[in-house]
Image 1 (cartoon, helix red, strand yellow):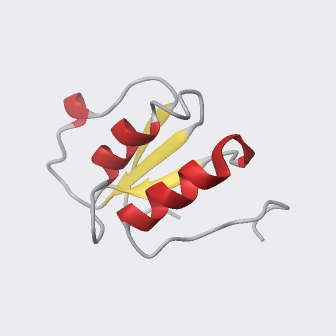
Image 2 (cartoon, helix red, strand yellow; image 1 turned 120 degrees about the vertical axis):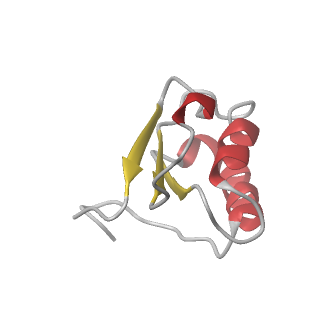
Length: 84
């Protein structure tokens, strides 16, 4: 539990997408890394937008040369690692 909120973690992008679709509107926020096993964060965001268009999403990455022009707009922010 972080700041009074229940948190869930997924081992990879495919499982995270399944979990997000299962929980649907019960989710308050999704935080996802751009690079991860079995899928990437940008594909995840584009996939989840059809079923959860208004959920806030924070994309994180340590990649220096990330193409931010390809990131989805609206309810999606980008945070570069490392962060505190």
